[in-house]
Length: 128
Image 1 (cartoon, rainbow, N blue to C red):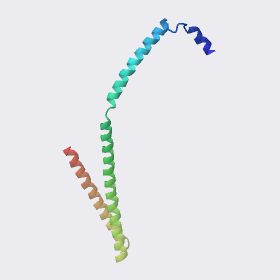
Image 2 (cartoon, rainbow, N blue to C red; image 1 turned 45 degrees about the horizontal axis):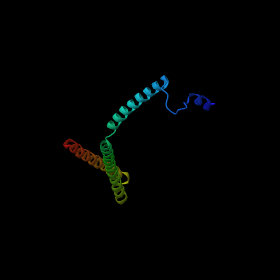
Image 3 (cartoon, rainbow, N blue to C red; image 1 turned 120 degrees about the horizontal axis):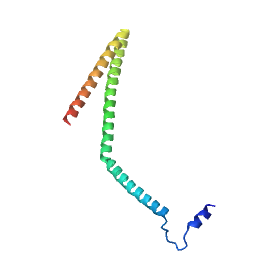
Image 4 (cartoon, rainbow, N blue to C red; image 1 turned 180 degrees about the vertical axis):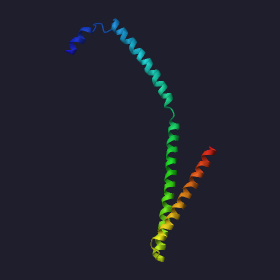
């Protein structure tokens, strides 16, 4: 059935007809093409920052590396102090006190290391 409706509108000489509907459709198509070209051009300008995107990705990775370093320093300080305290507890038979004291000292050392690393990063960001 769909073929029957299209056959009636075909012309026998093969040229396009200039009916008002086709002219309006052609004008609308041209207008749409111009608007899409304008929008596409503005989008290319807005997203042509491949260098900016790469710099942002590197900055994010660098920030994650700094965070991982700081957290590992804190954990290493606590675990190192706790291990030293546990060893002293076993060696000197002073049950929980060596573990408690050295775990707190390890925590303090870890916090100082994190603060030192954060202070260095703050000084570097001020220079930039």
